[in-house]
Image 1 (cartoon, protein in one colour):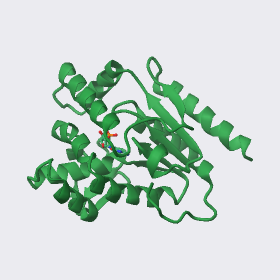
Image 2 (tube, rainbow, N blue to C red):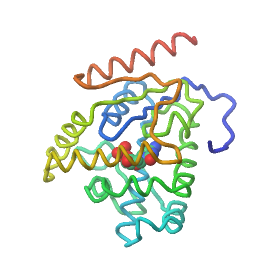
Image 3 (cartoon, rainbow, N blue to C red):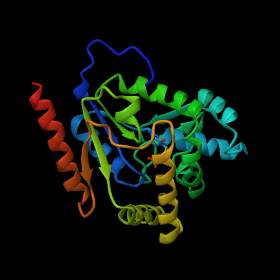
Image 4 (cartoon, helix red, strand yellow):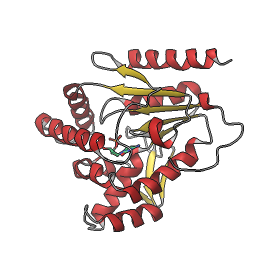
Length: 240
Ligand code: DC
């Protein structure tokens, strides 16, 4: 765990974490919850993606841990409200470059889990995430948020779905963005990311002991949102 002082009036019930595997619907759920509660939505995967995209642009080897960690320390990633109406929920900037869609390219998908393995990379990015989370009134989405980044969060959700369901959803998202789609390739790519994300030594993907597990197979977004809202409301009511 990263040691940073926690604010004395921090209310853990105002920190909501959503962890789960690739394409399980975390982003959609996180955005809906944040909007309903008037909280900040923060998708931590964006930071790993932005770093990976920049490393690919700069021709840095995905095995060069030291250079990647040094880049993670200094890369100026900003997430700001959407500046365009092209389906984006927010802008992602590296310096003055808009990388919102660039970080969703298959080349980034195929390398981001490798970049996320490295201790120096995780330390740099997790520290930034923790600082944002500790301000409270936040829905933070990722792989290790409830377990490592914000273990003191009062409401933790682990959102899961079968590999096939997730591959179908990812294909639909890509089609909506007019990207070329091959279901088998998408399935393989997600399977490989699952393997790397859940077997890594540092902060592997797994539910926190105090997380509520939601299986989203066969549920639409409204049903998943209702289930999550019930969890939030009952926790917040219990403590008031
Ligand atoms: O949620 P996503 O698919 O955009 O995340 C991209 C990658 O970033 C994911 O495969 C692993 C990494 N990641 C991580 O290691 N820890 C997080 N908290 C968020 C993402």
